[in-house]
Length: 461
Image (cartoon, rainbow, N blue to C red; front, side, top):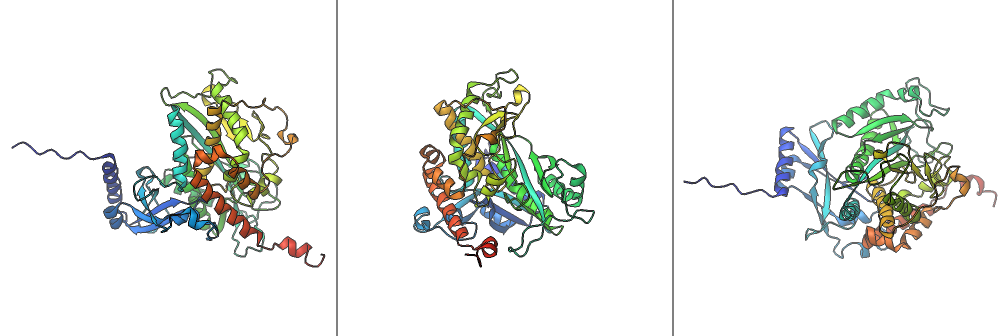
């Protein structure tokens, strides 16, 4: 008798089989099913590995994408989600499966994508917003390449929010006071924490490239190896979670707040970006000659200059973000660009022609990485489609040109709502939900009476 042929597995079935084998080989007992929310934090469920393998996917209410950082809902909530406030269908992305190195029992974590019941990508999910932008570049035959640089502070445990944050003590028992930019010894003060961080990153295959001490007290920066935007957003998302855990294990906090301390600089997430041809793999920003760039580069830069102000609600997503921008010593004040000019919001590093790129310096470390990357790529895409041209590169200080970015979250929300090209590109429903959530967060912030008001206004007005 002829041997019966095995049915050919679909790509999804092959991925499912590979993922189940991964869990079995490592004797995983639990699986953390992660979904990045609007803020960029992990939502989801922890389920037994056997149930995960049997069901292969789970469900969450779509309302998680219309929830503020304080856990409240915007006034427009009923208009942003389905009338039944129904569940989304979650499917794991096999490329994101990793161990949870700090778990006691063998535990895996995997990022999930969100779909509607009829199988369409859910419009409110940040990963899907980024994927929507990347599809537009694919239509142009282009592949964006991204390298994030993420800053953060280590601070003493702070259990009373009325007290200001303080730098932690290092190995010598004393907190930092002087500025320690690029100091090796200052980094070594936190070796036990950073060694644990590196161990976790290695166990999770996070592509952390270099680590430096920034100018603030116990302020550090990690750089990631350049790669495709989705993997870089995933890595930043996972790294924040990892760094917080490593710090907590040593009794301190790691914070990605954009301006955590009054007299210290802010923390940013600089985004190095270039475009490569899907056909040839070559960098389309480069003309092949040092210091010479293509028309695509000029159009992309023109798009950043025109649309970054309207996209600032993604680069500065919180009320605190604008303290960094308005009062930061080296934070960008406008959309000027220049060669190796760190005073500019758009810096072109000096490098070989094949590494030609733009460094956008607007985003704070508090961003949702998926949305920050989607926004900067959307700005560049609009520049290419509209064939925009940038201003002349600036050689002097861009700070002398004045401040022309939104000064508050309220202003940023208004500019985003008024920008039809960005709304349409990122998705009208998503932008409605995002701005409604940010509006509610701003209103909640305004209700808080600060210590400054009590100190200076209580008995003097």
